[in-house]
Image 1 (cartoon, rainbow, N blue to C red):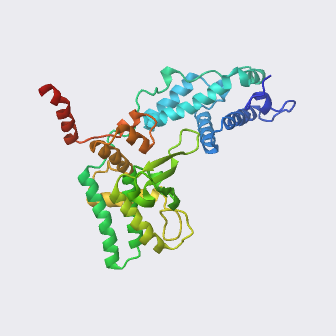
Image 2 (image 1 turned 90 degrees about the vertical axis):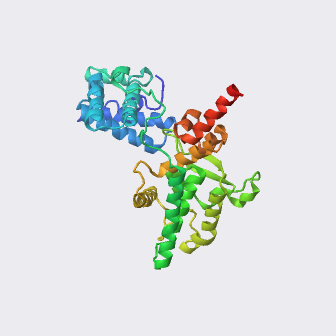
Image 3 (image 1 turned 90 degrees about the horizontal axis):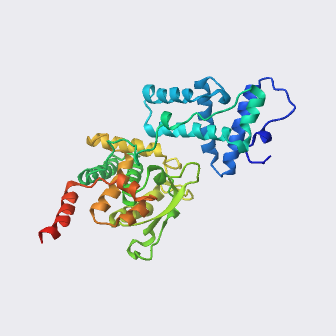
Length: 360
């Protein structure tokens, strides 16, 4: 018998009579699945979230895994889509977790099917099929209303953020430093095409020099250490080159003249709170929505729209698509294309360039 991590004979205690054999078998299955995933170097949080989901599915089906059928998956999927109205991507992720657990149980190498048959006279079967799960047919399944800022909206937003600093200073309020920090933060999110969480986890030392762009000094590049991770994997790192001089000037001024006034010189974070903590993504959302709503801008605009805008505006400015893809950390060009919503002026200019040879 092969001693694979998660195998039934490694998790089940032989010669012991269990008071509740069904619960003991189910717990052993989860332990085995956890050990199998740990052997694949998956993160503990990912494993924990999947285990919680399996327990939720168990409660829904009201049956143990060796009695699960495709009907249970069909009913669960119908509940998620018809009653709870979960997004397709969420439903597919949940279905995927159940599929992985089911495939683990029926894999002959792990021996769970014979163990269940010996104990209960039945065994687990495949419950996830093409006809009762959502296939991944589209590269993008986010909100179709999501869009970038227009250049006019973006300028209006940045101007308003700067005005809040001036108002706080004139009024002698304590919030001037926080307002300055947030105004700079939004400029950095846009200026380097960052995600909200990536921005909140930035440290002072993450900025560095780029010998090919000495005019930016120590702000020529940005080391993003907490990029979006693949499922179960650690955060992906990438190096983003600075391309917007005004954004470099904004963060340089903040680091030199504003951040020191918060105190806490030994704190590594770029964005700190008045109490010396690291600014959290939820706080970024709150301030963004306050400014957006005060300006009467569309609710379609969210902090991630700044990243959309970075990709779109660089595309409109003629920056190489491959360069943009590397900057924002997309593995495939199709992902970058999703975020590109070029303006009518750009499309008309592109059309003229395409038609020029024919009319020459």
